[in-house]
Image 1: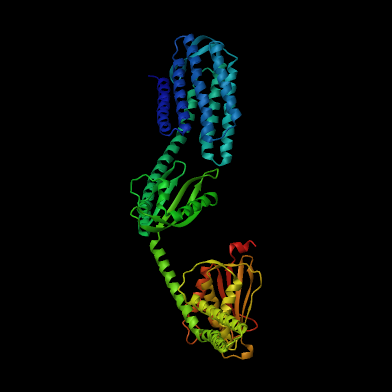
Image 2 (image 1 turned 135 degrees about the vertical axis):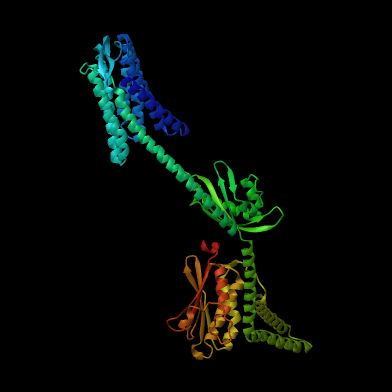
Length: 616
């Protein structure tokens, strides 16, 4: 067996082996189009190599011409797939150049079957024996076909297209591919086209050996693709390692979730599917394998909280995607639980929500603790009110004694009038009117005391600020008179109402006013002044200030004046101001203290204006 036969048998074998490998690679990943194009390129190269060997072993001129004619069909496949491979693999190359190459090569294929014996020769007149690689081969004696310039022109544009794609890839920074694919295509196409041009125009006396050049190009491209396959194997190994790491992270997350006792749920809005962890299902009372429906979840939520949860999700879907909600759920056995839920929406490119992810935590114990704390806070506030009224007991007793004494005196006078045989009825009527007036006065004092002493839950409503300050002023005015304190209140007219609980707010004001009078006890009677002033603080806020003319708050105590059990009084408990701040903050307001530049201290609190008042 000659060397020619060995070489031209090995080329197809190598090409077909590479073609089979890359075809299987493409079959497993249909999106890897470069592997399919390379497989077709290698197959067409193998086919044309058989044609070249056949031509070198042809027995007659007609056999040679016929083999060459059909060989152009494989060349057409080779050129078309080569253009496609360069375009896909390098992601470069001007489309118009690619189409020019394909169109010229297709035209050349048509001319191959329509003119002469084939595209290269009008007629093959004979065959000549020559020695090539130590073997005897046949070359043609023939008349060239001028139309073969079309095929050669397609190779010229192929070189230009490959060079353009290589330059683009090089400039983009993909230099390795630019050299192995782009540069090899340019080089081996030039070599093949040059050798074929010399042979077909009769300049060189040698057989057609284009597949030697094509084989070099196939080797370079195969090397590049094999590198990609190696990288794919490495990536696959890294992926396996990553999956193992992810599984480990998932296990750790599962342990953390179980320890934290919160559940995770995910809703795919496009598919209308819901996934949830076992902890989440246990929280809501759903079996582990039951298909979850969003309506079923909503039915678990307490009817009073259902609309609030829907609204939270709607606002999140229309804004930044995040939601927070606290609501009650009713389990199948009738048990109620409090749930704290947080989550966020994921949006697609058009801004439409597609996935909702959430975390749910059972906060029933926390809610129970908050309720117990609230009850305890109300108890302490009630004790504070009782204590405060105890401090005012003597003054209030004096205030009640006044109308009671007047009632007694009027009753005695009426009795004397009635002993007269002809009593003055007009005088009796006037006395009875005075008795009624004094009775109402005493009843008003008792009602105010009863309201302050009554155990009371926080019940917010619209409160007239003038009535609020006036009611407290009526309670303390007598005590202020006994202490020789000048008490004054300044309340502008037409103030909008605030939103709060009148009894608790009266407690705050009463506590602040009594503290102010305590602060100035023992001072100069001519300078003992306590004032309550009301003003707008901000467009939606009312400020009430209780000021005194005392020595002020010591600098080291100012930062701790509202701390529980902190007091500047010898017999104080240190709970009054702490309770006051708690009540004000429960009303969405603020309470703070400051020393006045002119002397004395000022306690200021703000309260939000009721909505109907804010619109006035």
